[in-house]
Image (cartoon, rainbow, N blue to C red; front, side, top):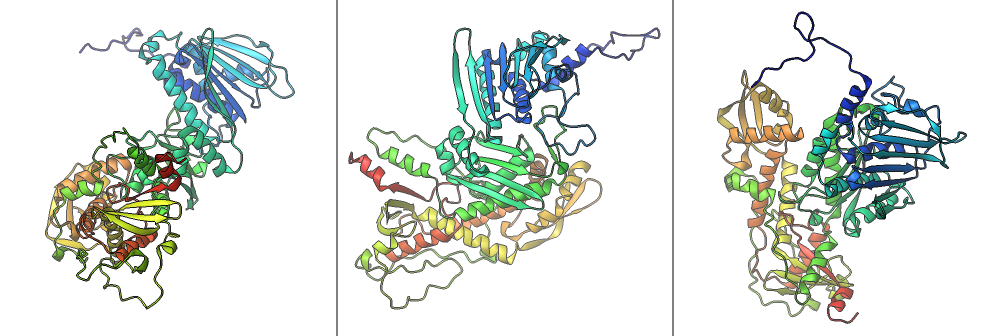
Length: 639
């Protein structure tokens, strides 16, 4: 490796300190603020939002490398303010007295001078009561303002991005990739501000093409956001999303989160905001994943658009030049609110499953349709269960539910005469004989959300009739979820039994890792894992969750460390416990091939309607699908 030789030396041969000129300073700042054309679009559109614009138009050419033009109808600038707008660290957003009370998108005063340092920038603006004016800047050289024609607002035009730093152009991706990045920036900002109209246009030498047009949405915030998300993410998302509106400890969470059965194969439909600012924050993403971990398999991802509202003095947005990262004063409170609010919404959704499941079923019925192979959705519970040894009955205080037994008496004469008996759950005595009352008819049962059981097909599929269609239920998957939720409720009431180790297991860690895992000792103890400091970087494991049986303490502790480093919190111990409960529920539920009486099937449907998360099994797959009558009629050409 060659030795570094400073270029500027004094008489003694040592490097000298000197002040960089303004042009070099701006080009260095541009490297931090303007990474690619999409970064420039983000800065300019955020300036337009801060200016109070109600409509914003973005035009670009060649992926933004040749032209970026942002037009808004905001408050504008006077001719006297234009030169100051191109000066570094000049801004109208803050006065500099309180950097912890930032209520605007921009506040650094770096974007415009940085863009003028690496491209050809012109700003045309008109403020109320002033004449319109234009100022230009190319490669850091600022021209004097001159009169211009403009009715209101501001037009910022950036041409030949990075012409002053051509080496940066070599790091640009294809025009198509850069255009996609611009599109994503506009989508995220449009979600944050549903009451602002956005237009995105791709222009060329002789034509233009509108890629996105979003009119301002009306109504309150939730109505406006619902309309905006329908246009951006589609009616399938909003039709299968739960409204989130929660507050605790001075924090608020609003937005929409999709049902587990509307999960995605990647995290591309996860949009998180803090006070309306789009962010990519590991803490928030980890909290979102933790909220869904019990209802989704590891290879599926939830879809959500969530805005965390917090007092600006409790969050620091001045930690990254692009302002895409934030730092919370109380990170645990923010994470807890997200997990609690989402889990409450998921529980409130009960038996609800996404409408896309029924649509896929109908497509599978169409002639010539080849149902694609779906990848395996081995759940987190299954994955963890493979790592944890089987828990014997002596190691757990829970009664594993006894499997159903085929009835010895003749089957009921018909569905019409079958009463809706209560469905026995694990740990409960057999249901008593119902009082002699008039039996509920299928017509009456059809008023329930999951309808009245009409048949059992292949000893696994329950077919029920509703008022406007039919429902097909996977009896094993549905009962597995019911048993699992009951076991979790039992554990929550009794607590997690701990097993004291005769000889504590000593795990050697680095001092920093030991400090990190010991900082989470209280939350780990709640999950049944008790650890203590053992001097230096060693940690002693003194108690483990009894339900897990024999535990590889060192491996578990290192996995927890990885999760703490990635998300700031760990739910791994709890996940392994839930994995065992899930496996117990799987073995204790109604098996495929078991014939069920009509009253049992109807009782199963009624239990599903009142049990949280019963719309999906423990592995994240749907437990039932619904086919509307009008859709079935279309299959046969009757509509």
